[in-house]
Image (cartoon, rainbow, N blue to C red; front, side, top):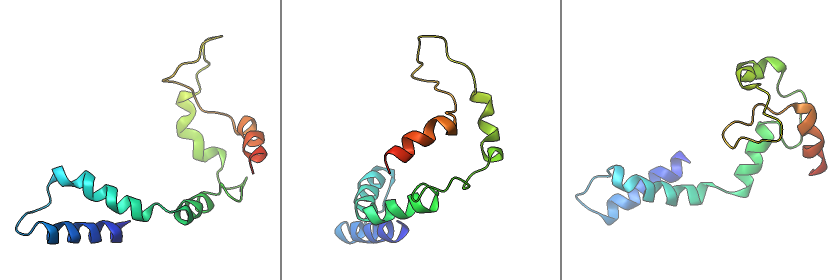
Length: 101
């Protein structure tokens, strides 16, 4: 991503001689760079590194999720909060993930 962003900044500077890149141009430049960097292969590599595909059950331990324990608050019966879902249990998610593989 850094390489593509640098290339887009250089291209923008060539198209706008004498100007500097400000926060007003960042979105335009980033969008062009992201369009080049966001490939299916990069996404697959990210999923692979995270242990999602192929699924690696041992990728994370319970200790990795310890900080999220604060959000383990039961929801009110019959109501689903859009702002607070809480930490989903792996035992619940695993069958859903495996079904789509």
